[in-house]
Each structure stands twice: as C-alpha cells, then as structure tokens.
Length: 160
Length: 160
DNA sequence: GTCGCTGCAAAGTCTTTGCAGAGAG
DNA sequence: CTCTCTGCAAAGACTTTGCAGCGAC
Image 1 (cartoon, rainbow over the protein chains, first blue to last red):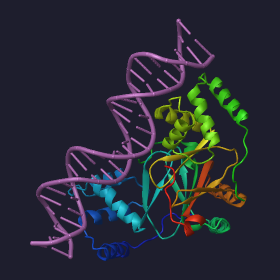
Image 2: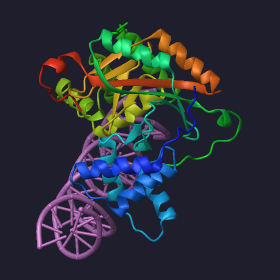
Image 3: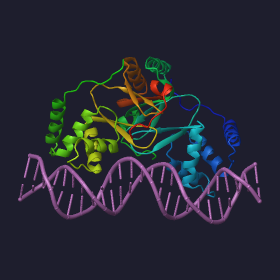
Image 4: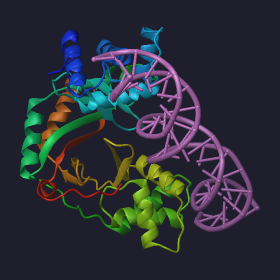
C-alpha cells in the first residue's frame, strides 16, 4: 500500500498548467515552466528555498527569483497542482499533487518523508466527519518517528 | 467518539510542572504558573500571541513578555505537557496535552478545531508504521473542511 | 502596445536571542 | 549569594509586497 512514485505524464501536466494560465488570463513564462518542471523532476517534498536551489543547479543560465518561486507555488497550490505540508519546524514543503491522495510518515531525525495510503483510514475519516456534520474539503495525516535507516545509521540533515 | 473536554485536575498538573522544574534545576516563577494556568483555563488551541492576550486580560497587573510565552511553551512542549499543531497559515497553536491522544478537524472558515479520537484509525496507523519498519514517536491527523455552523452561518474570524 | 510578470530590495510576520536587571532557591 | 528568568529590543528565518522595467500575447 506504499506509493513510491506515481507516474504522471509531464506533457499532460504542462498542458493542464497552460490551460490553467490561459483560463485565468495569466501568462506562460519561462520561470513558471521551469518551476513546474523542476517540481516534476524532483518528486520529493521541497521547501521553496530548496526548489530555488534545484533550479539554479539545473538551469544556471536562467535567473529565477525566490519571490517568483513563492508566487508560483502559491498559484500552483491554489490550482491544486501542488500540495503543501507544514509541520514541526517553520516553513512548508511542497510536492506535485499526483492525484492519488496519500499521507505521510516523517522521520524526525533525517526529515525523510515516506508516503502511504490506507483506504480503511480514508473511510473512517469520512465517517467521523459525517458524524460531526463536518464537510470535508481535505485532510492530512502525519506520523512522526524514526525511519528504518535512522534506527541503525547516524542521522543526517535533510533538505530544508 | 468526540472528546469535548477531558477532565484534568489543575493541582495535579501544577504539581507535575513543579516537579519537572525541580528535576531540571529550573525555577518556579509567577510567569510560568500563569502561563500554565491560562492554558488550563482555556482548553482550546491557542497561538502564543493569543495566549499572551488571554494572560493580559486575566492578570492585568502582571506583565508577561511574549518571549517568555514562547520560551515557556517550548519548555512545556519538550516536557510533553502541551502539544502543538501547525497547519495551513504560518504559526502554531498549542494545547494542554490531556493525556488522551486525539486528532483534529479544522474549520477553514472560522478556524474552529473539533477534536476526535478513533481507536480503529490509531490501530491502522500502528500497522502501517510497522509494515514500513518505522518507529512511531507521535502522529497527528487533521481533517480540513467546513464545520456545521459555518455551513449555515456566515464565517467569523477565529483566534489567531 | 497592453497588461501581467519578474527580480530586487524593502517590508512584514512570527519566533528566537542577547543582555542587564530582577527574583527564586 | 548564585544562577536562572524576565522583559525589552534587536536579530533571525521565512514570506510577501511595491516598483520599474521586461516580455507574453
């Protein structure tokens, strides 16, 4: 029941993005594409700052300001193309929304994030909301702990 | 399955706190007690800033600096006397740990937080962690949506 | 051409820290 | 008395905003 890395067609994703921009009278710019592509190429949970660093490495010739990264992530989040995760320390991490909803196990030593999905938990959540007459729009679940490798190896610093 | 407000003896809580301080060579100060008491008297999820405001209202004669609130909340969180919840917007909210673990439904309109507990979900979480050889230290689950009253009434601003 | 977008730097939040005086043990 | 705490203000981390020039359409 572990989702390692759902497949997602980049061309399709890009088309969706362009459509979103068109539909809202927004412009398709190099920076926006680079940000989307970099999120696609790095299917992990990234902070805005780390994403910016990835972009600098992958596209050394093109300057993308951190403000643009924030603005674009905001845009993508509103459009539900990316999701954000905020926990413990300050700051959020973003990931492409792979359509498949999933939850997270977060290693408190190395910051690694393991994704999982359990249909039974999903069902129970619906049930609880219903009992409380709560109209669910979204939900997130995080399990904190120590991942397998940190249980044996010394901890390292994760991206952040 | 809804926990409205678990009972918790303040005297006992205070004793636990004093013991913690004693045990760590820390001092029992007026500010620290006020902070604990205010958390106790307001069994809701509060931001440090809101907690500070509550204190000013309840104890107009005693000055408690916001830095002290942050420092004490940190201390209490390390001692697992309070728990924090971070989501969506920036900032964390704190609550007294009532021993009973519970999860949260968060209204995206009025910021109200409804607590719940489901043993079946707890069990499933354990199971998933075990499957991934993940050693759980803690977990948190949030369901976002619109609460019953906001579904009918206009939204108001919550504490923040 | 128009109007949105971008980078930059400045301004905002929220949180932490340095310090000198206050106060608990 | 000693050594921790506290309030204050300054510093930090992260994020947002104002602006003038740039670039998509």
